[in-house]
Structure formats: C-alpha cells, structure tokens
Image 1 (tube, helix red, strand yellow):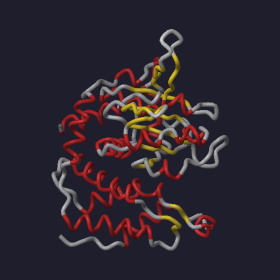
Image 2: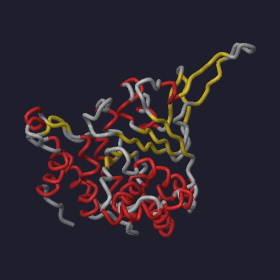
Image 3: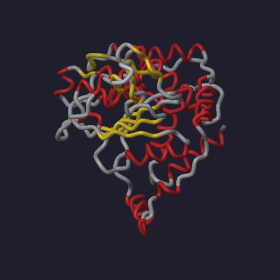
Length: 310
C-alpha cells in the first residue's frame, strides 16, 4: 500500500499548497486510528483539507458547523415513538460518517462537546440505553479558533485527551498563496480535481499494517520515560495520561509505516512527541502567568530525556 499513501498525499496537495508536513502529520494520525484537532485562525484551509482527505480516501463525509444552539441529540441521534406502532425508532445523528468534521467545535456548549467522548474513544454512541456502532474507519476532524477568540470556550480536558494530535496550519508562504490564487482562476475549485485513490476498506488495511510495525523493548522504556517526564515537570500541573502514551506509540508506528519501515526508531518517537503531547499538558498557574507554552515544554523534554540504547 506504499503507493496508495503517497497518492493520497499528492491528491490533498492539489487543494492545500505548501503545507506538506501538516498533510503528512494528518495522514500519520489517520493511519494510527486517531482523531485530529486543528487549531488556527479562520480561512487557512482547515475545512478544505478535511474534504480533500475524505475524497482521496473514498470516505463518507459529514460536517456540522457548531454554534451554542447545537444539541447533543443533533450529534448522536435521538429516538422517537411511531404513532401507529407505538414503538421507539432511532434516528441517526450527524456523527454517523467515516470522517466527521466538527467545525469550530469550541463554539458549542459543554453538553454538546461531551457528546463526542464515547464516539471518539469507543467508535459508538449510546442513546436511550442502546448502543449503536459508528462506521469504520471513523475519524473526527475538529477545528477550533484560538482560545480567547470571540464566542469560544475551552474544550474539556477529557475531550482534548481523545485527540491524537493537535496541529496548526498557519498562513501560507507568499509563493504558496500565489499558487492558491492561480489554482482558483476562472472559478475553478481544486476540490473538484481530487480523485479517489483508495476505499474505506483500503484505509482499514493500511491501519492494520501500521499497527504491526515492530517496537523493540528498549523503545517502550523510552516512551514511558518521556511520558513520566511530563508528570514530573515543575511547570506542569498535570502530565500525559496513559491514553497519551498509547497514542504516542501508535503515532510512532504510523510514522515509521509512512516511511516504509517495519520498525520504530527513536527519531520516530521524537518527531511525533510534540503534536501528540502538547495539547494534553496542563500548566501550573505560575507557568501560565509567565506565558510558558506547552509546546516548548514538550520540546525540552525530548531534548533532555535520555535516548535508550539499542
């Protein structure tokens, strides 16, 4: 499936100019079976990237634009009684897609945000004590504006921990922005040029292959040491959870798989550590007052934690 991975990336690059590393990171997160949080200012292509991935992978796609009046039942679905049979019938919510785009999720109420927790962790939703499985594969692409933007609220810590990575696209370089303008001349929409190069079944197969990438015993020690360093850092009130450790391992495997290797290296773990861990770390009040960034702490931990010998 090596060619398929590269073909997907090339199709997405038709839409998103100059963000090759971001595209590869998102692809890696999807191969790890994870969910993606994209935090950035409006208009940099967050939604377009999600659409491009869904088209290139042949995934069923759904989207909700979040506002404070979106209800949990809009997401998970609801049961309603049939007047003739007097039986309850379940109506699926908006989340029943392979790739669900939660646009501006941090504008939703906390109740609506919490409706995602079971879906993101277990691939299912429970309504009226009945459980309904979501389609496979299942990915959440959530976008949010930077914290403090008008009309936004912080996502719950439990939900942040369920996102495998948090990424930021940033503004394009001048040449890339010019290429974007050229690609849209005469009303052309680059999304219409994206071709499907695989199916949902192919994506499941690639995920299975990525999960089989070998991790040697000493590298497990290194991963645990990195996680432990977050739990003992003086500027952190809370470090990485065991869920984060599992996500880091899965991402390292997927990153090695992206590079056509059958084993994980120290460098693979180090490369994905910051996007996997930084959004899960909680600063102490003093560190927050001093405007310390969790990304910088994560980089410091990678630099100071001793690499395990082979």
